[in-house]
Length: 107
Image (cartoon, one colour):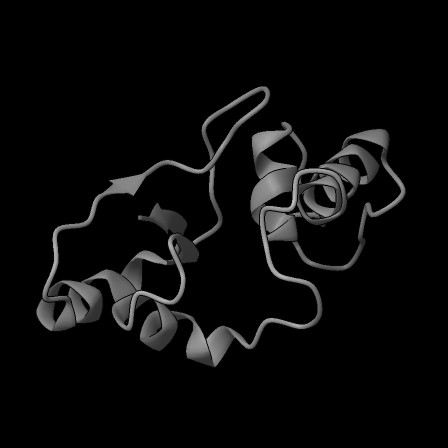
């Protein structure tokens, strides 16, 4: 998610050749602060650690209202869900962007 938030803040976290990282860039710091604020200020997720591997099942059991997951998981959700749901782009600041195997909001 951090990479997706950085992309949407107009920032790449590493050089094209993968030999340098840019975690201390103000755009990266802002992206991380936004992600933290979703939990701390906006209560957009439960307290504690969320296990990525349980998200789809929690959504299908309707114990989770919305997940951010890879679009590669969307077919499985569509096949297994016995209720209507939708998808949306992730939030953006300067550009619509996502890393390869892009994430999406499923609700």
